[in-house]
Image (tube, rainbow over all chains, first blue to last red; front, top):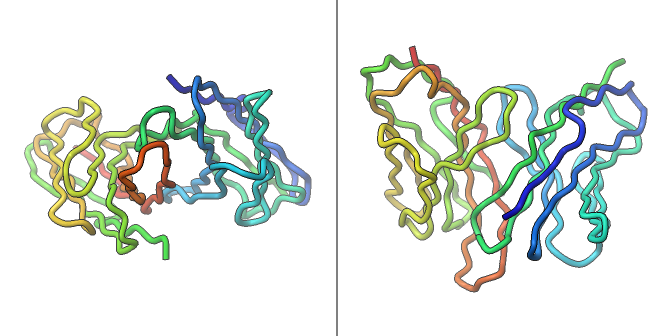
Length: 114
Length: 117
């Protein structure tokens, strides 16, 4: 079985500050890791993914994440946030014996204040 | 192009109505998904179609009836819904390779916001 823990349900930051959204996972087999963003009243948009290879993954809108197998983490970072980054961010894990199932974390609401 | 489209964007229906949600993708993906998302919660998987055949049904009540008429289209037929079924319904698609151990990225549509009165 797989699980995903997003440690912070809400993260408020000021514009142009750096941000880190934390994600830890548990799985007994190889996993594939994803960050999705959901803007208000919209669907989910893929930010970035780790399938294999380099553990530092760069995504859209200046976001990046680092896969750390020993700490079972996949934290999302951005060096300088904008007001437009205000959204819900979901960490998800796939694989683990199913080619179809995605296990989502509960989400982190990032609020960027002026 | 990684676009999944869904219609309608909003839907209001009574508990005795019959309605359908539609999803379309032209990425050549052969796996398509329906998710339900309640407010402030992550998406919950409902159904998965693989090569137009139902592959996964996550014990969804029969008042939800999925249909995959071809490789680009996915429908969700709704009948006799309850107010607690009000939610955002998301469609997603992914590649579907026959070889095991390969996980394909899911791409989501914008969703249909459903209100059951």
